[in-house]
Image (cartoon, rainbow, N blue to C red; front, top):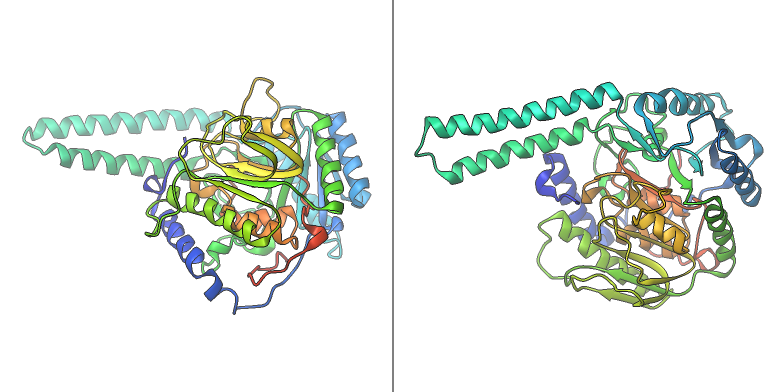
Length: 442
């Protein structure tokens, strides 16, 4: 279940404030700062990572490199188990170390800005066995101490107000939840690799993304030079990955067409958003407005609590909505090249498990070309902000990976982008708008 800002530490609530400022003042503050800058990702700036123990993944890596004119030298083969999950120590020794060494060894003229993980690469990083066991014991001890403290206090003061005790209990639980974030070693392999150059990045918790537009006024803990864009070409089968590659290239020649569907839960409203849930719901509304204003395609916005139901979304080209946890709703007939994501906590926990109904896996099976989702509880504020992602995507200037990067608040965390990072569904008819984009150049 997605958690709201009430569960998060102070700096997270400050992020919500900055996001409100971004949404309200974007045209006033950012446009005068500098002109539009286009630094669209180039094939030579991509490093492909493949698992040498998964033959289909290596074949797909070479197929993708040939289709996109990526140099042969930009392929790194790693020796890894054929499993969606790897422990923290395996990630460090068998993924992070060789990737870091490769990046350090290449000539400055071969600038790498993006990593692409192929079918067969692990999806999730789990904590080391020792840490997991110790953390579970520590969590149990903290919960036990909390209960005992409340019982002892009640025994000492039978007249204590229930409301006072309830507030203290709420406060202690908030502190425990904050601790869970900062000690959480579970992450996506992709998101960890985005900061692989930054060797001092904390193992637990998230890192603020220095490219995220909402954090422009902040001093980042990780510099832009240390950050890589990361995407993965992955799916339930090798055939689904090959289709994603082929669809991306084909649709760029014709342009993406169809209908954009946005599934909010409440009407837009005029009062300031008081929670992260409201901010993201309103951002879904604003994403719909930006796509509609672009004139790219018809837009359908639903603001009822119920989700789109089976058969309600023909010719779907773009989609963003919420909230159906790990249960895909077959409402869509997807257009070739479709891009979309569903805001819920478990939607990229697997791309392979046959019985799974998580949205990323099922959307790929149903024909989507690119999608986004978390490998575990991310907290709602960790999702890409819909109005930024779809706004930049429909302008046609930036690649899929760049649209993702400027709209994503956190790195070294839970999110995964599935799709060709070079994909520009509206490349054929670019529409530079008076918006602000900080170039993703090192």
